[in-house]
Structures are given as structure tokens and as C-alpha cells.
Length: 321
Image (cartoon, rainbow, N blue to C red):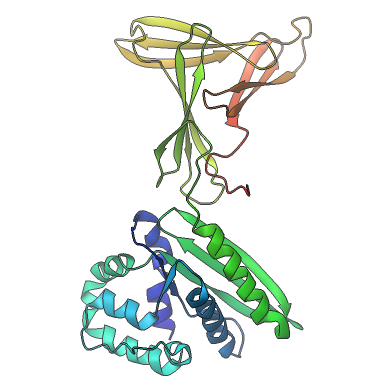
């Protein structure tokens, strides 16, 4: 059982790299890992989640047996015409699938990618008792749109099935929605890279690229790049001004050396030049598409110490609309 569970669960990682296309979203439900002497809890959660997937419109349930058959291309694996969930998640079936997979261990890498080609959403998790309650850590991953949800359900055992069904039903609706990018441009969906176009005073568009982690939803910023406009003079320094919503001007300077970008400098006048102490100010500017960007400036003794740029809305955030 443990071997098959790990074999399937690794798709959660690999599925981030592949975009799939099918009419119904294909869902595989792994056996839940049980941290309790009562191992039937893990089987019970897998069956409850599978039943909800089978009921849901727009989704196609892929049994562990079918998934392993696709992965190994072992024609000897028998798939029942009618899915028997009790049988699918039984120890006996796990042993059967492990035995049928043994001859294909040397092709495990190819096996993973064949299985990924048949799967869009993967559901799994961990279950354990917590005093009088049962705690379930539910993971749902959609490799098609790079969404993943990690949620916890904790309640009395008598309510567990009902609560899990509701959570799975709600998450399937959320995770299957097309991803909306809260930015002017999507650069790379897999790497979570987006861009904003900011209009300078002379109507020139300056591009600001945001490079996020690949983690979804709500990834964290890794790098921000302010790119020079097309047609800029690649000899010396060229300065642009962007007017903030507060009416202040933000200077953006691009300096080239030997035809290559050498530095980008951002500046704005210190709020109170008469003060010799630390000062800070946050200025807002809007992109062409109307997304708000914040510039956070910090001065000390009249000298700029730091300038931080970030969007108000995470471009890859998961917002209820």
C-alpha cells in the first residue's frame, strides 16, 4: 500500500510541469496517509473523496488501477467495468498493483509522465485522530492551471464524511476555474511571471516584470525588474518621469554602457528636506490595465536608502469574485 501511495502521490510534484487538455478534468484520488493505528481512516477518506468526484459534473474519476495501468502500459492489469471503491482502496488491490508494477521499475521516469498524461487533478492527504476529533489535511492539485489547495478539516468523526464531501465539492469548483492573472501581461504561467505597463509623462510605456515563485496560490515575489522602453537610446543615461496617484513624480533612469543596460535608478524627492532623520513614503501608480503598484521609499539623512516596488494584488492570487 505504501509503495503505491508514494508512486501516485509524486504526481503532485511532477504535474506542476505539464499542461493538459481534455473535456472533463481527470481526477486521481490517492490513498490518504493515516497517522493513526486505525488505517481504515485513510481508506475511508479516499473513498469519500472519490465518491464526490464521481458525483461532480465536469470531472472524470481515474481509479488507482487505471492510473497504474496507463503508467506501466501493462496490459495484464485488469480494470473492472464498474468501479468498486472498496476494492480499489483495499490492501489486496494495493498488493496487486505493486506486483503488476514490479517488472516496470526500470522505466519509472517514463511511467510517471505517462500517468501525468492521463491526469489533471490529484487528491490526497493525511488523516489522524486528535483527541475526540479527527484531523484531515487535504491536498488538491491541478497541474493544468497550476493551482493547489492545502486545507484542514477537523471535526467529530460522526460529521467527518459530510464535512469532507462539502470541502471536496467546494475545492473542485475553485480549482477547476480558469486562472485569472491580475496583471497587464502574463509572461510565463509555469514560472509565475507577469508584467505591468506604466505610462511615463511623455506617453512612453515602461515595463515592470514581477517574477514570483512557482507555488500556487498566492506565490511570493522573487525578483522585480524595471525594463527600458523599446527604442531607448543605448548610449548614456535616459530619464523618465511617472506621476503617482498622490501627485508626486517618480524618476526612473536607465543607464547604458557599451550598448548594454548597466543600471536602473528610481528616485523621488524626499518628503521633508529640512529633516535629518529617517523618513518613508509610499506612492501609488496605476498600470495601463488599471492595476495599482506601490513604491515604498525610505530615506535617512536626506539620502535614499531603499525603494521597494510591489503590486497591491498578487497577480497570481486566488481571489473570490
